[in-house]
Amino acid sequence: MTASALVPREARVVPPNGLDILKRASPQAPNGYAPAEVNCPSTRPSIRSADKLSQQETEWLQKRRPNTIDPMREFLERVNIEGFDVGQYINNHRDNTTALPNIAISFSGGGYRALLNGAGALAAFDSRTTNSTSAGHLGGILQASTYVSALSGGGWMIGSIYANNFTSVEAIINKGEDSAIWQFQNSLFKGPPTKGIQLLSTAQYYDNLVSTVKEKSDSPAGDFNTSITDVYGRGLSFQLINASDGAPGMFTTISFIPTN
Image (cartoon, rainbow, N blue to C red; front, side, top):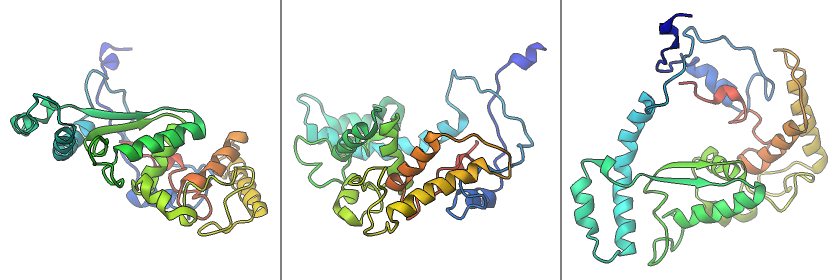
């Protein structure tokens, strides 16, 4: 191995055709839940040094950080910290956002408990929530943040919010039984309610879980092992993703995840 081979480089992966991505990501994906054969990128990926941000993230920050300034100002003015001139502070650094606080929100794991607790916190941080920007409240922290991350059950919550066009927690709650997601009154053993968007009986629900997972084990791309995790994940998709059949293609196939 030569010394040059050990030098870390910027990771670059040639993205697949855009139309192919859309086909694989849609509920009408050609292979449904099943893995499919795809061509490897013509340019081999490389390992990027972790001593700095990637070029893509650097460019994204230049777009995101300016959007956090006004929400940050509104929040700090509402907090009314004694002896702190918010207007002067923001104005002094408006053209240099790296000098302003870089807010990141993270939600912990813990299954449904983490999902529900995280949803409560997210609603409190979101200025779209009714009365969240009243005195003493925390609305606007979400809009002033740069990063949002989550783990496990917290990931169910924020992933579900993201997959549904970053809707608000309040909007989901206000729809009640008409909401396409977060119908937790039925367990995964019973399946989605038979009201509103969800029309499957429990028998149809189980048939959907079994047949969809069987698509993976019988995939044209080869034999793939399946486990209770596949069934469990499919059951969760009915609760977390806006689709009458649990969206077997949308955000549940690895080929949708951007590679660059």
